[in-house]
Amino acid sequence: MEPMLSLPRLESTNLHTLVIRLGAAKNGTLPSSCSRALYAQVLEWFRQGDPAVSKAIHDSQESYLSLSALRSHHHKLEVKAGDEVFFRIGLLNGDLIAPLLSGLEKTGNHLFDLAKFPFLIRSIDMLPGTDPRVAASDYASLASSPIVQSDLTLKFLSPTNFKLNAGQGIQPFPLPEAVFGNLYRRWNAFAPVELKFPRIQWHGFVADYDLKTEKLKIENSLEPGATGWVRYQFRDPEQARIALILAQFAFFSGVGRQTAMGMGQVILDRENRTSTMSRGDDKVKRGLKHWAVCQNC
Image 1 (cartoon, rainbow, N blue to C red):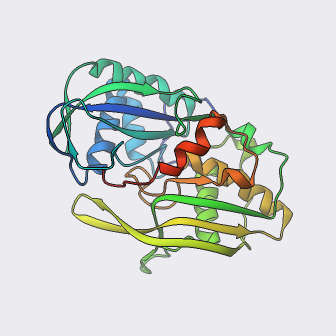
Image 2: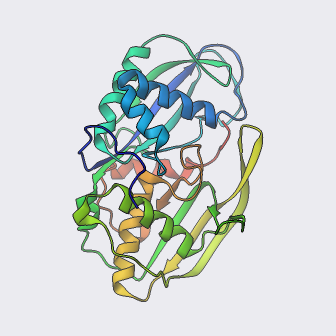
């Protein structure tokens, strides 16, 4: 499936995640829900860098980016002026970095609001190794991974759910056909033509899991979704190979619904596989354990 609109002048097949660090500009209580405001602000930065790119991202049926929720280090809503908060952006095309950084640079030291709370940009982490949430890869590197394993474990770091067939509602349990079908669709929307996968009828199954249902507030609604981990198994070697590629891609794309609003943040369990992503391995194992502690702060 192709995106509804093609981004202008974008040809890069790189994948990136960045962490943007903000400073609270006053004492007060952080907004309990600012996912939509955060997405709007990111689009505004793209607009300042290149209005055509911002419009194409907004109008596309498949999101060119994923966003985490806004988080604080102490996991509390009460902050003092100068306290740091941060969020993570996943970009499914490397050429998106230039207009994003241009917009961030134009904002400079000017205050901006997220859900009526003022912030300043403090710093941007974009080099692998500077933060466990920062990574870089490309579609060809992921697709050429020689590793094949019959099982893999995904950690769902923020509430994750999936839209069922028309009129059937929302599914919070990450069934293999929902997870890998969603990742397959997004991969084929953005990967180069020669790396797109043929149609797949998924035959994986859940071998083990430890999940709970959490809710993420997005404006005036509460979105239920699963957090925790699931171990999937694939008896077909080719499906197992593709599933591993898509599981690594998920670190950049997110999975399921509302991935640009903080939902569907996911990572492949590093203890059970070798990655073709560059993330600064020594920091990853320590830092990601504490990544999903707070969804609304």
